[in-house]
Length: 149
Image (tube, rainbow, N blue to C red; front, top):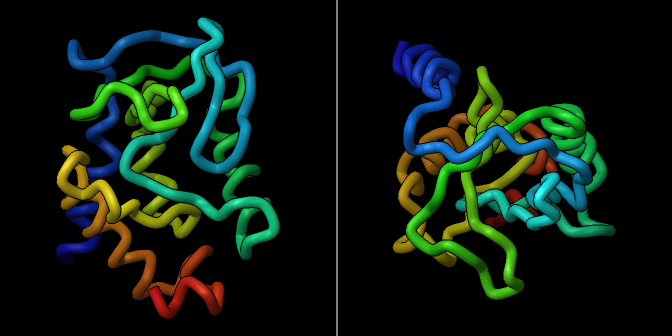
């Protein structure tokens, strides 16, 4: 029952609000957790990490993000820190009906990026979703190098 309530919360917590900036058009998906918008800013999806090239589940994660946002309008929600070390904006990405960061974690396309837990406002929520994906052995949780994590 708890899982279904959590899923309901995830699916209904995506309506754009005054905390969100946008809409912006996604013009390129760089990898599973980075995209470029029409203002030419690069966006790093905050609080999550997807596999890098040549790692298990890289292509699936990139393709899913592409499917979810490419050539679509998105809304951006700021995290505690504005930019990461590579100059990309750190944001939670929303469509009009979905929280993309949460979706990627819940469905095994991304892991929670624990290195910056103290600086991630949705860390606890994301970890709960990650726990569900991990228990169900979805996506990245089928990779041998990830299971040890």
